[in-house]
Amino acid sequence: MDPALLRERELFKKRALSTPAVEKRHAASDSGSHKRKKPKVEKDGSSGSKNGSESSNGKFNIKTSSGYKFGCLAKIVNYMKTRHQNGDTHHLNLEEILDETKLLDISMKQKQWLMTEALANNPKIDVRDGSYGFKPKYNLKDKKALLRLLDKHDQLGLGGVLLDDVEEGLPNSAKAIKALGDQIIFVTRPDKKKILFYNDKHCQFTVDEEFQKLWRSVPVDSIDDEKIDEYLKKQGISSMQETGPKKVLPIHKRKKGGQKKRNFKTHNNHLAGVLEDYTDGVPSKK
Image (cartoon, rainbow, N blue to C red; front, side):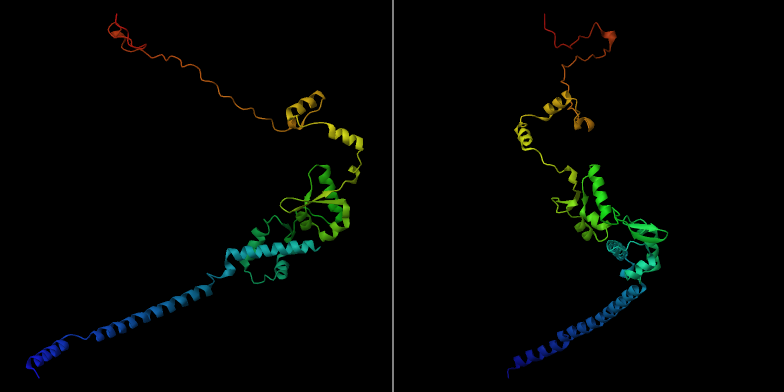
């Protein structure tokens, strides 16, 4: 074998032995990384146990949140409304309400909030000597009370009554409305809500055809509101506009007049014979 190649081979072995192996460095770094990862897992586990302890202490308990409280209030109000519509109009105390709504696991603090604030200040709850009942817009006992309400609205010119308000305040409202029959008129608004009106049968009369022809033959297209007001005044009839808010006349802006000549105070009176006045322009040379 060539001695030169043998020398190079020996030199290569010496360099290889003096240089650290790359595999050992990676292995060392990997083992170090494993060692660093372990405390992170333990840290996460400790934080998880901490969160569990906080949730067990009640800091994140859903039953103590404001949403849960108002959810309980909404459930109570809806229950009181339903039992009122079913005819159960007698009042209940808080313990009876919580028993019937199955809200027996609320805390004393929430019970105190319901008694002193939530139920006491709710516009749909009637409070009497520590007991609670539903308070509708119209407290109607039967169909006769509904008919009196509609008749009163008709006489006072208040219009009709919302069907939702009637169903809220009248127990078994569907049965009562059906029993009244044609004594009630239904009108549906553009928003799909139904209005109840009193059907006054005394106002139902037939108008003679000759009078209808005379009524329809009067042309009113060319008559504006001002002419109608003038005609009513001549006949001694006051129009509705006089009792309502007065019309605000438009404000006309004043025209600006010619600019007035401004008077300036004169100074340096002791030089009156020396200074010249150039107010009206430069004087022409003589």
